[in-house]
Length: 305
Image (tube, rainbow, N blue to C red; front, side, top):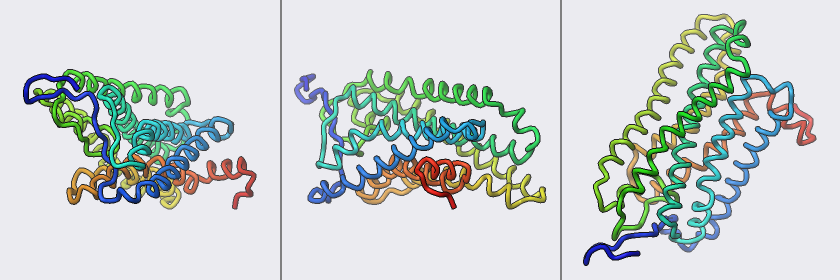
């Protein structure tokens, strides 16, 4: 820490908070968190491995679960070090620069996952609306190009965030609200003008919210299309995995943004935001997508039912 004025001390380290009120049980809390991270990483790596190795799964419709798995792995590895460390203790220090780097990756992979869920809607919409032209519209090259464009969009969208945080001065206050770094959490600790951070952060939130709004509105068109075809059951079944992934991703975000009760509940919902989607998405796609389920069971030397 460096002295700025008689009443201001520049902060060089932030403190990440664990789970308040459960300090005596932190070692026991760390065990399920570690297991959830391990299962999430193993599950997403399995999805990527199976799709990469099986020629029958190297089709455009299976590239989207691969993109989702990559986003989930990015979220897991971005938050893993600090969340495990704070689950073992009450607080843990992190340098300002390391905190800024972490929030960049967390926000970047969050936006990337939101974008993947949006483009997965277009995949399902084309599969239902124009099944005969699906393979000609969404070729492997085109899907990879779409994925690359959205990945670059996510990077460019959150790239200014570290610069806007780096220009701020942090003094006196140094306790963050979660077990990992978020832009809105870090900027509140600044003792200099953070209006640029506020407005650009709001812009990023609106961009990410637009993905969910477009997806929700677009599902009205999917439902209208499904009701107009004969094989409704099969068409609806193709959307189940995507709907589950949407709920897994957006429900923790919505509850975190709208429900403000005890600090303990807020911290638990914030942890669930990063733990639940990477853990549940591989399970959903293995259960609801029989082609992936069969190949995973084959790799595990189990006879699929």
